[in-house]
Amino acid sequence: MRVAIGQAHMAEHVTDDEKLDWNAFCSDLFRQLSRQPPQILWHYTTGETFIRIIESGTIWATQIACLNDNKEFSYAVGLLRNAIIGLRDTVQDGEGRFLCDLIEARLAYDGQDTSEFFVACLSENRDDLSQWRAYGGGEGGFCIGFDTVSLARFCLTQGLLVPVCYDTDQQRWLANELAHATVQYFVEGKRKRPTVPRDEWAQIFLAEWRNIIAPFAPILKHPAFRAEAEWRIVRPMRADDMQN
Amino acid sequence: MSRHLPLRIRTDQGNELLPIRSVLVGPCRYKRISLVSAGDLLTTKSYDVAGLELAESEAPFQFT
Image 1: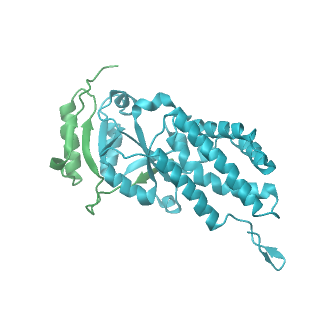
Image 2: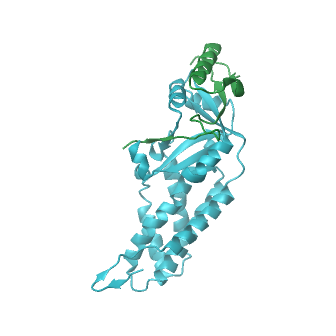
Image 3: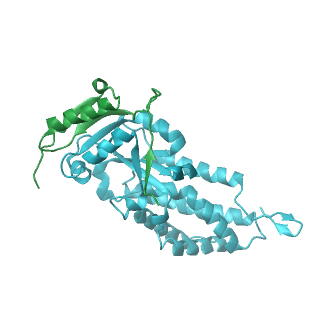
C-alpha cells in the first residue's frame, strides 16, 4: 500500500496476503487439472542426447520458445485473449472493462521468447512409433523410463509435474476461470487503493499476476497432439540457474 | 541467454543417479549392438543395470 514517509512515498505493491490468495486460487486450478501419474513416464530422445543425459546425470528443460512446436505458447495466450474478449462485454465495472481492453492489447504479443519457463517433456506412452519418429532422430533413438515418484518429489521444490491438457472444453473452462479471476482480483485491488491511479495499479497488478498464471501456458496444447499423452516438468528460471 | 536448463533429478538413494527404471533402444539397424552399448554406458556411470529394464523397441526400423 502507499505509505507516506515525510515527503517520500513507498512504492505501491501487491501485498503478501494478496499473493497468498492469488496463489491459492491457481494451486486449486492446477489440482483440478492434474491426476495421478503412471508409475513410469517416458522421455524420447536421440542417441547423442541419451549419452549426454547419462554422462551428465541431468535431463534438460527447454525454454518454451525453443520447443518443436513453436506456436504452442501462442496457443495458450490466444485462449486467454479470447476469454478476456468474451468477458469484457459482460463486465459492468468500468475498472474491469479498462483492464480487459488493456490485456487484450497486450496479449496481441505473446511474449514467449522472453518467458522464464522451461519444460521437460515426457509421455505416458512406452515404445510409441510416432514419438520415435518425432524425437528419436530417425535412427538410434532412446526412450528413458523415469520413476514418477522421484520426478514428483523433485517437483515439490523445483517446479510442477503436470499432464498436458488437450481437451478444448477443459481449456476454455480454464481460460474463463483465469479471465474472471483476473478482473476480480484487479477490481478488488483497485478498491483497496482508491488514491492510486488506475493505470499505475494495472501495471503493478499485471506484473505480479502474469507471473502467477504463466505456468498454465506450457500445459495447454492443441488437441492434434493428444496422442503423445504428454506430461511436463514446468520449471521457472531462478537466480541460481544463472550459474549453470 | 541459455535456452536449456539442466534438471538434476535424483532417486531417494542419496546418490548422483537419475531415477531411471527403463531404457528402450529405438528403431535402428543394429538394435542389439545399441542395447549392449547403452548397458555399458549405464554400468560405467554406476547404474545397476540388472535392476532396470533394458530392452529393444518392438517397432521395426524403416529406411526413409
